[in-house]
Each structure stands twice: as structure tokens, then as C-alpha cells.
Image (cartoon, rainbow, N blue to C red; front, side):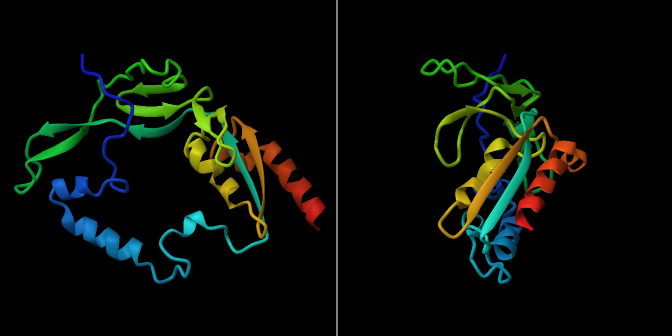
Length: 190
């Protein structure tokens, strides 16, 4: 039985060499032209790391639902197109390997059918304090991404975060807890 580390081996965004190896330079060039040189974004390519130009941010999101955070692929020899001699396939037989250095490393993560998920017992790092917390995303967005707004806290931008237990990404809009947070916020603002 084949096993793999739970690390996503190749990602188009993190590793453009995958597109090059598959002979897809045209797609790579298009992504670079369209996304890397967006003239409508005056703050530049890495603007997501900068706080928005507002004085206050109120972030409300759900947490602690199983959330997909990655996948494991394997090379499957074959021919898709005449010019591509192999392709990547989801490794449905991949397993999480125990980490002998840190027995708790894989706690809270599941790997089923090649899909890696975080769960409410997944060990995460708090975006600002760096403390270890156990949490997962809202079923769509991983916890690490949800808490990104916390990094915008500064002298010029105040950030308030409300995490709603087990509120799903879209269903949160119909959640009475979300409505109460919104009413309370608007009541103190106006």
C-alpha cells in the first residue's frame, strides 16, 4: 500500500514548474499577463498583505467544519495530448504518515481519497500571536485564510473578529448569530 506525506506536492500558484513540465507554457504566460500585471490594482501585486484603506474592519466567519486544504497527486504515465507524455492524477490511495519527531503533527487532519481536510482538532497557528490553536475553516475556506484579516491590525486600521462555531461559508448569511453580531455592530456604530 502506497503512502504519501500530507503535503500538496505541486500547486499551480505555488509551483509554476508544474505547468512547464506539462507543456502548458501558454497558460502560465496568460496567468502572468492577466494576474501579475493588473493595472487596476494601484497597490501592486502583493496587495492582499496590505490593510484596506479603511479605519475599521469587522470580520465575521464560521469555523470548525471539515474543510479541504489540499490534495495529493501522483504522476500517471500516459498521453493526454500528443505533446504531453504524462499527467497528474489524484492519489486516492495516499495515507497520512506518522511524524516520528512530533506525534501530534497529523492530529486533526484527515486524508481520504487523496483530499486533505482540516477538522476542528487541527493544530493551527494564530495569524497574529503565533500561538497554537485547534480550529478548522468554514467548510469552504481554510482557517488560515479566514483569519487573514487579523494581520491588518495597525495604528491606522482596527480589526475586530467574530468566529461563529460551525457556521458554514454561505449558510452564515441566514444564521441568527451572524444577524445578532451585525445588529450589535451597527447599533454601536450609528
